[in-house]
Image 1 (cartoon, helix red, strand yellow):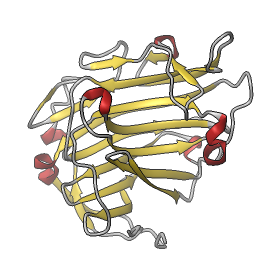
Image 2 (cartoon, one colour; image 1 turned 90 degrees about the vertical axis):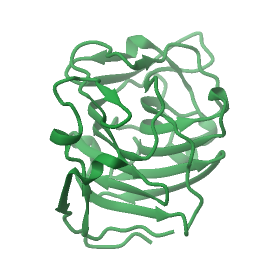
Image 3 (cartoon, one colour; image 1 turned 135 degrees about the vertical axis):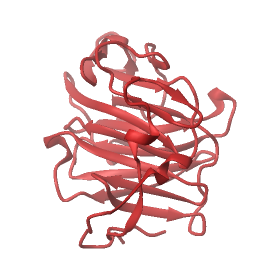
Image 4 (tube, one colour; image 1 turned 135 degrees about the horizontal axis):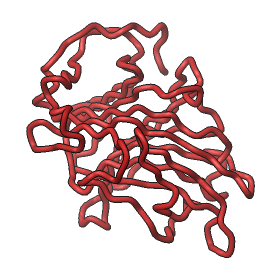
Length: 262
């Protein structure tokens, strides 16, 4: 396992070439998709609305906690007379995607017990093993980003110091999923990489999600605990996916980081 915070040349999305930017939500197996969530729920996306039973979550999902207005506005609100104390927001692509670059403009929520996520997921509910790739912000310390992945339900995770507070404004975050490696980026800077020589990597195509939720007290050592009555907001701007075939559309030199992650 290694984390890389060094500059270098890499392949970049050439969105003007690779994606049909004039067609929000447009997608096909070659060009991927780009979605700005301008003013209504776009075709190809599903909003969660149900009571959620999971040992790590103190959150049910409500469509009323997600608003489309020049991006996704996700809310967390308290609820009463329910097993979970909160209502959160979650959206996912209805079609699976696989190797390529996933990028979003994110402004995570700040506060103990809160998690803002951008990730691919598939599991037994969809008839597969549990494979997942994550960008997560834990609201109790938004100066770090958690990079994580699951292979058949087995988790590996690392918290990466960003050098800034992610909750102060929206920024672009991305991960690249290759057959032999995973890479995570912040504002086009490579911050972490793992190869298949260092660890097992996800292989199953998954669904792309974005969400905001509060953790159960059983995992508060990981993310803290949201006080009763907590409200919070997160923002997800333009989301893009480009398959590996499109990543050769542009090449540039990334800005260097100054130190290496252990």
